[in-house]
Image 1 (cartoon, rainbow, N blue to C red):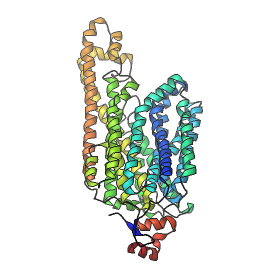
Image 2 (image 1 turned 180 degrees about the horizontal axis):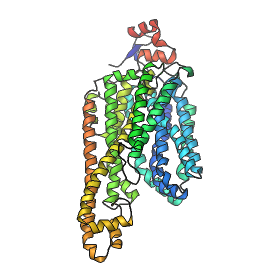
Image 3 (image 1 turned 90 degrees about the vertical axis):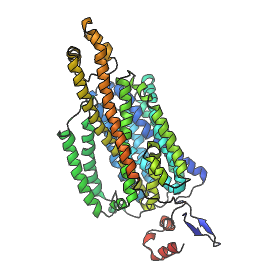
Image 4 (image 1 turned 90 degrees about the horizontal axis):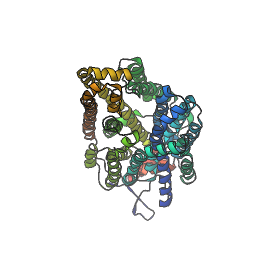
Length: 531
């Protein structure tokens, strides 16, 4: 039931959202925030397309993966920290800091003269990017009531889908026609627009939590960082860019992950005693909050595997180029964009439970819908940290999904490819003597024609067919994995309880916006209860 209050004449009136702006200003802020978010998401696909040229120019093939890893580490680690800081010091300041760091990192990345500089500056970019997604979603929670949010949060998922669609084209075109340096420079003018709108239009409203710098959870930040870094490094090291797989028992994989797990457990003990924890553990006592975060983790587990492995299938089996293979997944991304936007609009008009069920069947609705669920059940003082926790688990779910699916694919492919090679030993020996890489790739048949004498040419089609089948079997196993992760996510949604969408903030939340420590004032508590 929507919450209301008495106006001056004694008539019930709806409470306004925490931050009051006219509709034009709200739309400008929304556009600026989405622009910043678009830059951060576009950066991944654009840079990925340009990386081969970059590592060639900077002579850094051995450090190839660190250009991505540095960004991933810094952007993931900072998500919960920014979320908590935005609750304490305000969204505006944290978002301005995040966008500024992202733009400085972009400029310096474009100026890089060697791989070491590029890796460092990509890490700086990530430090800024970590603020964009959680604080952007929290700002939507500030500017709009829960019933309004669905219409706008679905657009945020659409931003990611569009970036995946146009990123490879933009990155390839800039690299081929201008310079890879401009892959980074192009962020600057657009980012400055976003920075200006937020600086001049978004008001400096009172943050929902009153605390000083002395109250911050510095020990928690340190232990959290110490745990997440080795955990992500271990997951990243599991499958190399060349496709080779390290065993879980190796120190660079399992050893680092074990260290990370131990520190994460220590982090939980620290958070239980912290005055202002960066991830308040009491939020997880709510069944809906816990179930929503589990469901998001499982859905991202499957989504990332799908987006990564489908282009690999088209490259290895169908012979597509890298750019063309990226565009073959457009039906998936168009469905993601459309379902996310439509579901956000529908959720804002009806209640949640039925759509929570459908969210287990589609990534798009879940991307926007689960954010609405989390923001609807937490108090405003926890809006930033609750949104950032959900964002953090999204990213961790994707990382874990890539590691597990990469291992499963490689094991299936290696077993089937070994049987094919046993049936065609001469062909397999010729290929292995030419390159120590995997047996797949564009032009496999042409390569074998060059390597083998004409007497062995009749064996080539059956060998290539067998290798393609092995690759397809590996991909099939990955999609069975994503199917079961989606089923598990669907099961988690059944633990989400029905909570009607509020048409406004609560009376106590309104008081807390203007009056420090209102939640502790017995007089205000009585007034709120009376209303």
